[in-house]
Image (spheres, rainbow, N blue to C red):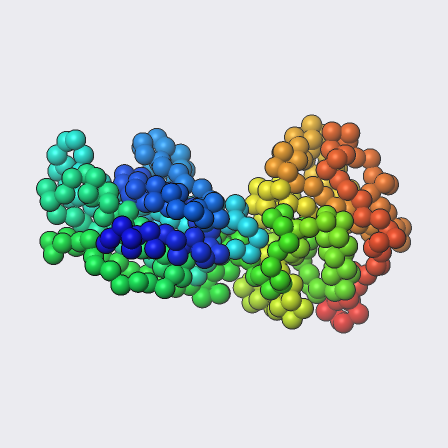
Length: 384
């Protein structure tokens, strides 16, 4: 593979809308230098980590792996990188997680094979490869070059770059074992429900006007005009951002939604051209971790529960601590008026703690008031 070919591949990666998180251990270090040295890297590389020591790897994985250099470990790293990329990515951008672990030539002779394991994860595809290199044939730098080239090729494929023909860096005595698995929409959603991936986004709307997500969470059973109007008004107040709806497949006090139920609700958003995110976090402090810097659109009834110590084991201090962490992540709450037991309440009716007041922004009643609810719609349709 020539230097010109490698540069062309990196330029092609940077020209795609894909964004990636890359986790490397034990090799492929040149790939990061190549990616970062070509203009456009800031739009592609969200994060790059090198958990080189065993302690660092354990910290990343959250456990001691059966083997620090194995295909399983590379796939686990890729999945962690994919979830991280989801959290860091621009709204609606396709993301890729890359995991690499290697045992290459070193200052001391190795008893085992010189090898590396590589994996990429995107929304509907898992790719994995294991390369065993001939011992004594290359220097450490040369083995790193081979592994870096493989990583760049795998990343370009994950980013859906049209593959250009090139020679293989492997010799006849090296070996390559690779496979891929594609996931259906049902499988992706089940992975969200099971907690393997943190969310799945359906970008049905136009391109985002800004990096900040403006999120209206709810069950949307069904979606109605009040939801649509509320998010439109909230977006206008923010000035710019990416408006989207969010449904948690996991409920704090009900069974999880089924894949079929999720798809039925997603269809509503497809029909009206609105972006929806399917997550697995019913609590706002966890949503803040998933969507840092976002503005959450809520009703006054939800805001009242958010600041009620009853929902924090009766502790006012714990409430301040948890919501303070949301604030530290750059999250805010846009609060619309809501009728509760026949009384229309707005943010001004609530006693927001002084430390949190700048987190809560009122949506004026003259801009939005629709006394309608999904519950009432279901009752009228005989769905209760």
